[in-house]
Length: 584
Ligand SMILES: *Cc1c(COP(=O)(O)O)cnc(C)c1O
Image (cartoon, rainbow, N blue to C red; front, side, top):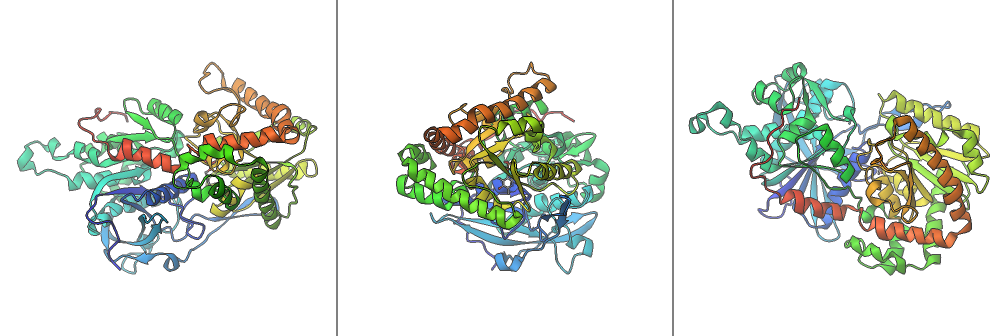
């Protein structure tokens, strides 16, 4: 099979992402970014968009997480059965890495929507007998290895990906660079659109950056400085060579080192952050760039549990395709909603018992916290003051479930995992706490539907968007979160959930004061609002659950997000945009 079933001669949107999460059995993702890419594909297919996604094969995935008896994360390598899920494509192309030709091929999966829409996902692979052993490993481990390994992966993704699309004969309307990892595709386009010197008479005009900008859309995903990929120019020269003159690369990607975010910013006609607040923060990080906002969303059908799908099918028919209809959540009878929720809760508690041996009760208020374990997410904030936490539960019991992996090199993230497991041990009997190992797609699916409250405590302004709380809202679970990322847009205090700490717009707070206020709010709201409402005002609680579905889920979904990308980004034309910044 060497042709892709693409709609006619139509121009496609080509979406490039280092990770894409399609489902549990294809573990080529590590967390939120990959899940978002998967939801993007799912919505594009549902909306019958001419869309193709490009990612790395990651034969060995990310890693499987286990715990040692003392609560340390143990990383187990995995390997998935590529042939079982993907089909190979015949065009092979090559990219130059460290002066040598490296062959790249692709495999594909067709994501088919019940609406008839189809989105091919191309997985790039260097594991050929013709390549050297080192080169064969380039597409093995997601976010593995050192800087050089990462640079090679990004060459395969950006340059290899663009060449594969050409070899397949696809006409591309826009290249969507999902996070800086894929920014090398801009260099491939610069080369492709190069004008002959005898026509333009000026070295500089050979490189048509405006034409490239018109083809590229860039979404940046993190306000965390370390999250922006950077490479030393020495390494780049050695590994990438000089696909464009070195001085031009410096002008576009930074003088001291190559910053992939900057490269993408300078060569994309439309740039966005993933929530309104995140775009503001990004504009201060990269002054002079017009960074718009398209707030993330999650794929409604995927992240709605079976019990809630049944409920919506009955009371809000058409909801999965026309997600705006979820505003009619008020039509669901209280008891039916509660029964559906308790069914999901029992299923989760059964899973917790099976995976951790921890017994929890369906009558106890259950808090969930699961995401990548890393310092800025502050998973341990709940345990800042253990005496206070115990006091909180005098009015009603609590139980808490955790999940999440730490990147193998994130030592602080790993320490936090150990710390939480320590608290689980100390508090046993008073507050039951379970840590589910190997958090991934299927566990996330259960977790966001089976808890009562979804907790998120990032340090502002580091949470670009966050999406797990949107998944929770689709299942009538209430959010209790720091006002950062999407929650700044989703929170109506006491109506769609609750905030933790002051608004980030109150910039008079010094960090220690803000932390104090956040911790006070966390405990006070639990003790005086959340616990009493749950145990004493179940009718009001159910009303809030309906608000969560009707006001939060109806908006924070990927169908709305994709429609925004279509109108704002994919149909966007750059005539002569803002000057290429000279940020370095
Ligand atoms: C949704 C999801 C995430 C993202 O969680 P955030 O709270 O938005 O950081 C990470 N991992 C998995 C498996 C998910 O499903």
